[in-house]
Amino acid sequence: MVRSRSYIATPPGATIKEQLTDRCMSQKEFAARMDMSEKHISKLINGEVQLTPDMAVRLEVVLGVPAQFWSKLEAIYREKLIKVEAENSMDADIELVKIIPYNQMAKFGWIPETRNSTDKVINLRKYFEVVELRLLENNQITRIACRRLAISEKSDIALLAWAQKAKLVARKIETSPINVKGLMSYIPEIRKMTRQKPSGFVGRLKEIFSECGVALVFLPHLQGSFLHGATFIDGTKIVIGITARGKDADRFWFSLFHEIAHIVLGHVGQANGTNIQDENDADKWARDILIPE
Image 1 (cartoon, rainbow, N blue to C red):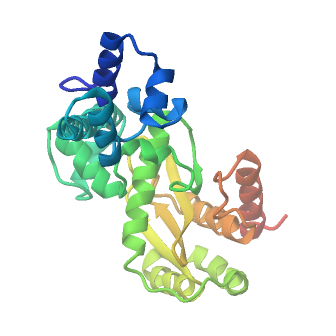
Image 2: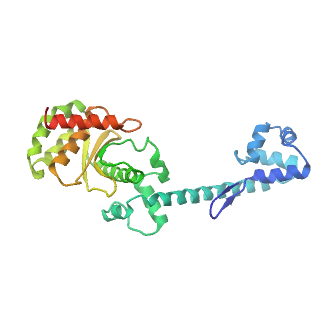
């Protein structure tokens, strides 16, 4: 039996168990009469396996209850089970929404504005491209290398929301195949841009990255993410997302070179993202490139 706030899903096995109790028949004897293993009968009674048409016919012969009755019970159970699981997952996701900066994301135009909790969950599932928000904990979905100031459950989810927007924007950017060596050859040119105004370097900077298989994306800072930049692989390209947090040239350039370091040092695409040592190494690489020791 499985429950949610509004539904109870009771497997046909509960009715089978009642029939065996009325007959004072053990599961062992019942398994023998059904010509099935005790293990399978146990799983059937506990709702762990589906009651098939073949089983329904056997139950009619052994227990004298029409096969149609058993098939109908199974159909009702499966339907209720879906409703129970959907309601429980919705409730869990509604709790998760509370730590997602939904209103700011809506203000930026990333998702529709709404005050309804269920609508928020549905909108966020579509935004993150997952059937349930709990799946955002899966490292296969969220392998990100990034530079930020703090780490907490709330900032983690804000980071994922920001990175997802970077991913969606990057999909519209055409890039050549990934070429890390080529990117390294452009480092001196990129470094010279640190003395230019944005109007003088942004176009060329994007062009360089695109030529090396990297989509460069600029996004506003998302409250609670404590983020300066993030890097990850999406399909056949690398995505570098940079936030205008702080609006200072030194922070911008250090964050950009920090993200380039993650590419050069091979941190991008790691199964568990980056660790503290990776972040320290990226800091050192960026520091030494920008201002040689």
